[in-house]
Image (cartoon, rainbow, N blue to C red; front, side, top):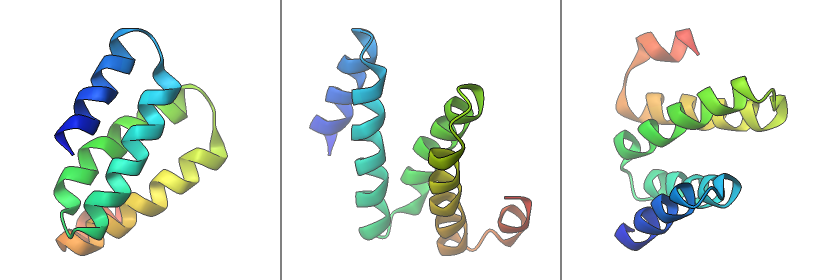
Length: 83
């Protein structure tokens, strides 16, 4: 996982944001499967900002579904209703 995070950072540094996002999305799915939704939430919130800014509604919906799942796993009902 650390290698994936480093790879994602490298892609961001050289301007390959789409590749970085793809790796980040896969990492979030892995964190969810591992039962570590707290780590996934930070990635997902970053993706949400980007997808809102770049007007990608389909990808935004996918990210919000994952965010909802993470908030439910954490037990943060306040944020579940906010999403």
